Length: 289
Image (cartoon, rainbow, N blue to C red; front, side):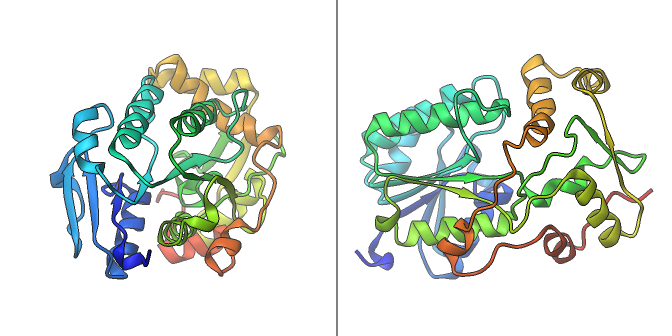
């Protein structure tokens, strides 16, 4: 089946990653359906039609996905019931006859992953396998694009990451990889790709790059796990959210996110983008003092 003959549905198009993917498909002249909790928020793109498609609304999802050849499933917003919503989406996709599902998972997804939210991704992957839908899993490392958001008002990144490393990935590289798989899914059926940037960085390295790009000094200040929970308690977040925040750093510390792969280049034909390049392209650095 030629790409122009296939039907596409892209979830999360109003977000950073799903929007990047939808825009790339539109630029290539590919029509697509954009299931959305709030269709009015979906981007207006040539050949794109936004339809109701909240992850907790099975009937709307079945209508949105019925007979679709290629579907991108961006994970739902972080919430205690996210896995339930993922299962609802997957069951609807299976009943709607989706021919191939590309799921945006997380690097090293496993039932006992240090990063607590990676466990949800593993369970989601297992449900997709059980549903019998042909699939590809794109397991993203931490987003390079989000590193400026780690910097506090005092110019410090604080967390229990020690001297561990993470192979940070650019969202644009993830989008390019997803589009490559969506446009020709057959070679990727049943496969999981660990998507990373070109190098694994410590948070001290990240602070150095942010300083060089943003022009304002940034430092990394290690915390113990206990200090990390205490310093974040003031936000009043529920326990599962605190666990997710802190385990982002402990997953760096124990090496869970450190292995660099060639998956981006293998899928897209171009090398993975460095943190320095991501920040300079975005004109990004730490917040102004």
